[in-house]
Length: 93
Image 1 (cartoon, rainbow, N blue to C red):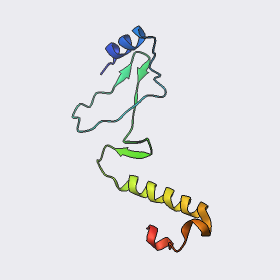
Image 2: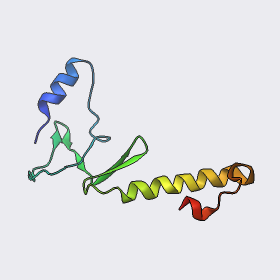
Image 3: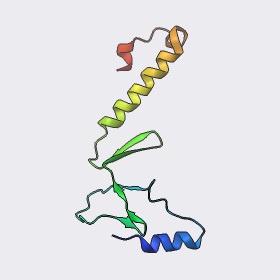
């Protein structure tokens, strides 16, 4: 699938799509054709992180929950004894 129209409209506003930094993720799409720009194909991914949340084409949230729990553990570890005040590591899991 070509994105020629998108690129043309973007160029009309002074924008350019960076093919190296652009990725595509399919959700419930039966089309097997790749997505490409005029400069070449766009890399297809099965998950990405946006605004701190993991988005996956499998529709699962386990990876996101694990990632956030890991961040919470690190943050509490950085707070030390004063920040925890009686909270045990088992309470966080």
